[in-house]
Structures are given as C-alpha cells and as structure tokens.
Length: 161
Image (tube, rainbow, N blue to C red; front, side, top):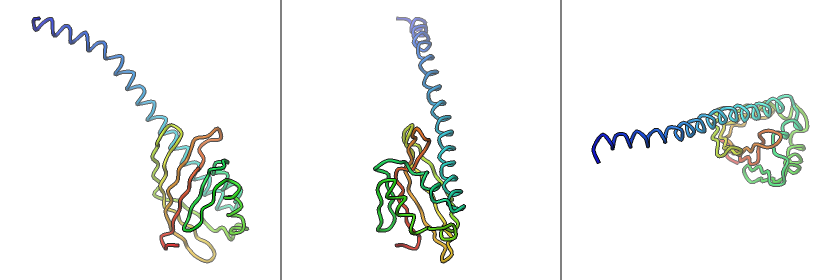
C-alpha cells in the first residue's frame, strides 16, 4: 500500500472518531456543569444549617440531615444513628437560642464522588455562652428527592474529647 492510500485511510478513520470525541467532550462538560451546580447546592445546605443554628432553630438545623434510619453523627465517644435519635440527642443540649450560640463553617472542601454523593471537609467554630469550640468535620452528603442531605457527619474538636 502506498503512502497516499495510508494517509487517506487514516483520515477516514479519524473522521469516524470525531463524533465520538465530540460526544465525550459533551459528557465531560455536562458533568463539570452538574458538579458546579451540585457544589453550589451543597454549600447552600451548609449555609442553611448555619443560618438555622444561629437563629436558635434546632428543628431547622436537623432538617439538613437525611430522614433515613442509617443517617449517622459521630463526635468523640458519641455516635447517634437515625434522624430521630440525632434530633433527640441535640434537644437537651441546646434547649434555646442562647444555649446554641453562634456557629460558622470555613475552609469548606467539596469533592463529588458520584452524581448523588459527595464528601465534604470543613472547619467549624461554635461560640457558646461558656466557651469557643473549634473543630473539623468529615461529612457525606447525598442528593435526595428533597435536595442534598447529610448522611454521615463525623466531627472532632481541636481541643480533643
């Protein structure tokens, strides 16, 4: 086979690849756009939790957790599993807005794992009447019919337990 025939054959093969490459590029760009929208929605979830906490709305705060049996929080030596158990655990500790203090999150990193699951790492600060608490949290969030919700929250204090 001569060089000209090989060039024509390669060009023909290349033209067959162009639609596939274009389709892959479209899928990639769509995924990136979805990740950006999801990241914004996850940030909104976290901001909503901070807002609810800071207005003394414990019920609003726990709305950020998925209402499923396997939702879990863990901090120091305490682990709670299930939405009702989480809500019940917070209630006696934070009976009113003054006991809840002021919450803030910073250094938020969001890593999408799948189209409906993301890992979040953040730093937290809670200023109560008694003390200022600093810590970090590793959080898994899942996209549900009700939007992004926390399914696992593992928090630790910079001061230890």
